[in-house]
Image 1 (cartoon, helix red, strand yellow):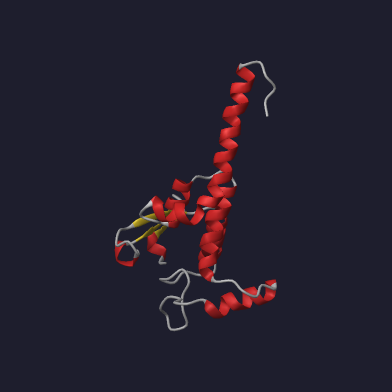
Image 2: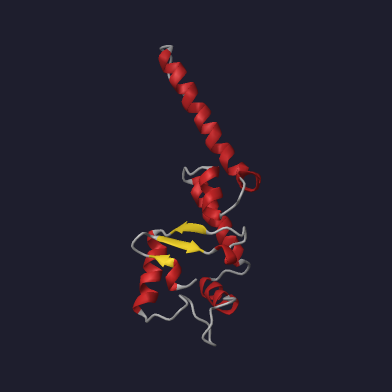
Length: 145
């Protein structure tokens, strides 16, 4: 990630096509936590890369730092990619849709997202079905759910 790809005012990161897995440029919305981290990085002094490596290039693989964080937190088995899955799970469990998870993760199709997270959405569909049942019951003068 370079500073030129970020717009903190617009709260977006534009991943250029040449570095995007899909080969298409992609806008990633930046949430409040991400903005706090980026602003702290900016205050620490700007280089070309937001997360510079030792040789002046960019940080390639934060494995050592990630392992230190896991050790401090007392976590034994976690992969960096698990954080993406956790983000999608949190989104869906808190009322977000499969389509929103798809866009957040940058999946080109909702099929992949739906197959990985469908079990989470099923509870929401069940809840939606109960809302319909409650509305019908009330319309018929019956007690709802």
